[in-house]
Length: 105
Image (cartoon, rainbow, N blue to C red; front, side, top):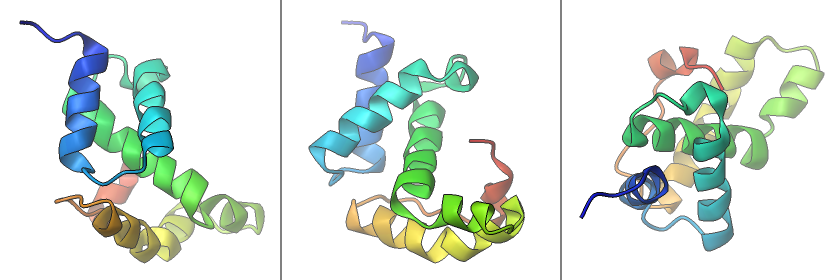
């Protein structure tokens, strides 16, 4: 049976963050499906970028740092450890690396 895009992204999110809370799972999946920038990405890439964007904007001080005048690169550096701690909590086999941080949200 062929998976539709939603099922493929949900499957990728489950692999990338097996312990993600249900409400956050739904938000991440909906973002991956609804984001114009992720429309052509593979399900795995869309899931990963959606997970990291969700964590950065909803679960860290990233946006507050930007509001305080930090540039994007500095703000991303300051939230990197928090992001990786959440990824670990969610059971993710991956971590965000400094060199990954040039990915767009």
